[in-house]
Each structure stands twice: as structure tokens, then as C-alpha cells.
Length: 359
Image (cartoon, rainbow, N blue to C red; front, side, top):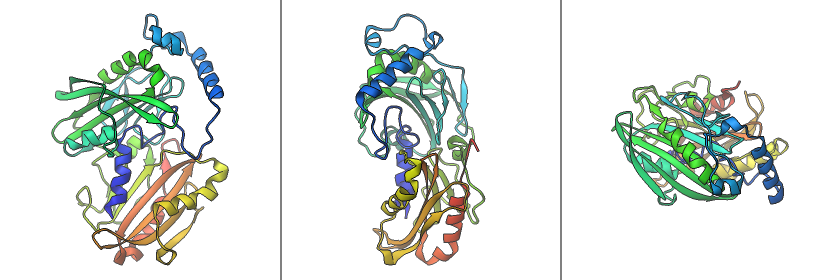
């Protein structure tokens, strides 16, 4: 029962992998433009960049060859629900469905995650829980908010090419902070100075209330028998009052996570049940609920099936997918199979109550 919760949590803990698709990276559901068109679009964007977005001085030789200019920063801005303030790249906007910022002009994404737990969370934030992230190319020890921290750098391969990541990690003994910036590797020489300055600008209120709903800009209506967990900003998690985190087996749990993909709006009706079936694979005889969500805040579909866990427990697993402009939000929930009649309508109601920050 906990596997879906933890899987979605680990995906979001990547900072850049699970909240919002990194600039330059496209989902499989989207058509990949021709390389020449992509380069032409990139060149046009660079020509439009204002001179005041540079941080002073001439670009390096490598930066000149790629057409990228040094990265300028804006004013210190708070990331809701995290207790973190930092200076994002000039022209940045809040990340869709995530704590942090994205600059579409510069193609830089800067993600912030705060979570309660042990120091193992730091590596989970860096790797997304997969343990597959490369070893850092560089790493420095720094001090943040009175605790030891480190700034590092690595590179990852994506469908769109190589992306460089620079990150800040800190742990104060009870909670972890991860700030991860992603940008195209060919712009690295031009951007590293600005990204480093952005990370060094981070201020962290370690006593601030953790609020995933505020961080991700995702709001749900009341769920009977559940309350918002304030243990992590990676996902919006609801548990029965007083429940431990991670939840114990057979404890009802509901999680809302953005999926790092995009579906063309005219393909949502066809793609939604296919995605739901992959998320909750089960024989048709075990499917208790399957249908369209057309009576909620956002359109989508849902599926609930009875499944057996590795420990032999029988659980009811729910997946509700709702879409905003082609971007899916996944509402997953599970409960002991014996309690499905009580919790099924609550899970379905929660999926229909999802609202976004902009709305």
C-alpha cells in the first residue's frame, strides 16, 4: 500500500524531475521538434534577452560560442510553504505544481524541497530516490542558517540532451533542505556563476511550517477522516490525524503529485484511462471503479482496483488523474480492502476537489 506513495514521493524529491519537466526536456507524449527548429528558437530567444539580465562583464569564450549570456538574478523571493527565500534568475515565474522558479527565457529551473527526516533524505533529493544520479563533478562545503551544507554539481542525460544540475543540500538534525537548479549543459559556462550566486543567496527559516499545498500550489477540499501531512513539500499528502509518516501498512493515505509529462488537450480523453490502467494494473475482475471525471474542478479519469501487496495484504488502490492544460496531476490513494466502501467515495471526492494556485 505504501509503494505508490513512496514512489511518487521519491519522484518529486528529485527537485527537478518530479515537479515540473526541466527546461529543454520533453515528455514522450509530446512531439519532438526538428533539431533545426529547436536551435532556431533558441537563437531567437537569446537575441531577445535584455542587456540588464547579465551580471556584468563579457561572456566567457565558451558562453560566446553557445550564444548564452551570464545569468542575472532578481530580487530575493520567498518560496511558499518552505521557509526558504532566494534570488531566482531574472524574469522567473513560480514553478507550475512545484516549489521554486522557472525561467523560460533562460531555460533554467530552480526547485526547492523541505522535508522532515534523517540525512538520507539529502541523497534522495539529489537522486530522486533512484540512486542513479552521477557522482558530483564538484562539491564544496558551506554554511547555511547556522548548519553545515554543501553545494555540488553534476550532469544528467535526458531525451533532449545533457542537463547540468547545481544543488544546495543542508540538514539541521530534524529536517532536510534541497535546492536544485537545472539548465542546458551547453550553457553551463555562462550560467554557473549566476546559479552559484542564487544558491548562496538562500535563506532558510528552519522553524517555518512545512506546507506542501502552498509550495506546490495545489489545494484540496476537506477529506473526511484525513488531514494534510506537514512532513514534506515534495507532495501533497493526507493521512488520518495522528498517523506516522511514512504511514503504517493498511493506514489510509492519499497523495497528490504532478506527473512530469504533457498530453495534448485533444488526446486527454484517450490517454487518461491508458495512464490510469498502467498506474493501477489489475485484472478486470478486480477493478471496482473505472470512469471519467467530468464533475470536478478539473477533468480527468479514475480507476480503483483491489490488489495484493508483497506482504500478502489485500488493498484497494485508487488513481485519479486530472488535467490542467494537458499537464496531469495524479491523486493516488490506498486503504485496506475491507474498508474500501468507506474510503472509495472520499478518494473520488478528493480528486474532484483539486484546485490550482492560479485559480
